[in-house]
Length: 85
Image (cartoon, rainbow, N blue to C red; front, side, top):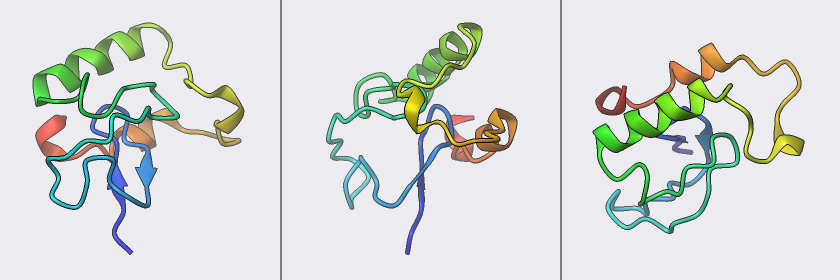
């Protein structure tokens, strides 16, 4: 199974919201940072800008009920793809 990581926050997903080709976003929302895949993370710079805003606002979970117990944001942020760091 291939794991895909959010370009903004590093949350892991079983399927890429960018489609199998990596270029066809489904415009769904990341349950952690709230980024709309294909819109706010379309380029590395836009992902970095969204991340900075999200972190400055306290890195709150977009869907708080889905936040795992013992969540470690620093660990998750290390999973961001290199080109989007």
